Amino acid sequence: MYKSIFNYINYSVIFFSFTLSIFFTAPGLANDDLDASKKPLQSLTLNTQEKAWLVAHPEITIAHTFDWPPYSFLDNHNQPVGPSIEFFELVAQMAGFKFTVHPDGLWNRIYEAGKNKQVDIVASMTITKNREKWFSFPRPYLFLSSYIITRKDYQKIKDRDDLKGKKISGAKGTWQIDDVLNSYPSVSMHYFDTYSDALMAVSAGKVDATVMTLGSALYDISQKGIYNLNLAAIYEKDTDLISFGVRKDWPELVSIIDKALAAIPEATKVKIINKWMPPLRAKCLLKKKSNFLTQKKQ
Image (cartoon, rainbow, N blue to C red; front, side):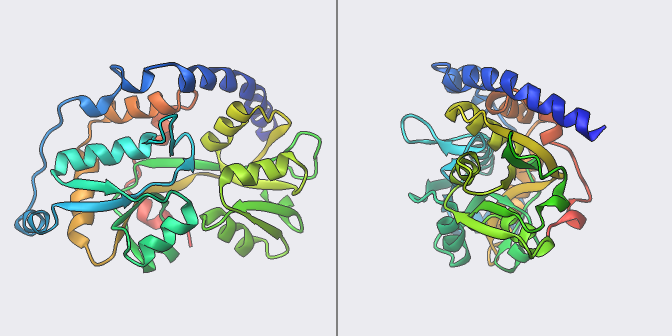
């Protein structure tokens, strides 16, 4: 059954690529009536401590990764765009606080900046138990799946256990690197600054495979025309819980963001997802998982 699914997915890459090229290059699309952030939103019911915290902290700093399309990346005007950005803008609007965007967008650097409290929030962060040493998390706003990406002419990986002893590329500071190495210590890991660079290393034959989120892989395959790649196998399905990593000494902010995310109408969430990831099923990316805390990665 899995083989037929993967054959379908690989065949669909061509269709996805065509669809993505339309949605990501259509002029004015990001500012049209699909922009859910411009619609009126309900105000939040905050407690006394949360209100006092907002008065004492009227402006916060958030860091976005600039090279994780279609979730968070720079547009042609060097402005951060994507669902992660739009979700946070809605949160800020509903909570009533101002924010500044950290100028650096390289993941491993903004992750360290968050750990050192040089920024208050790091967006697009996968919830893991290890990261809870430095960050607190409101509820996730995306539920993503990760895939093993290989070249089409490389047939030695059929499932995740086949990663043993292989050369794997990964983006520095991402959870997939740690997870692969913990699960398969015999892997030879090659580190790159971005997911895109890790993917290109596979295409160039420098490594055997990489592990990354499906939407990001499809975007790069489409935009960069690297059609010699193959979705070889599912690595993990719907377990990549994406949230905002908040500095641990600000529990009030975590509570405020959580309330705001809970108050965003489901229809608004679906519109945001469909705007940036039209080939993917929005409902799959917005699954309500009341038990997500028990599914955190190590």
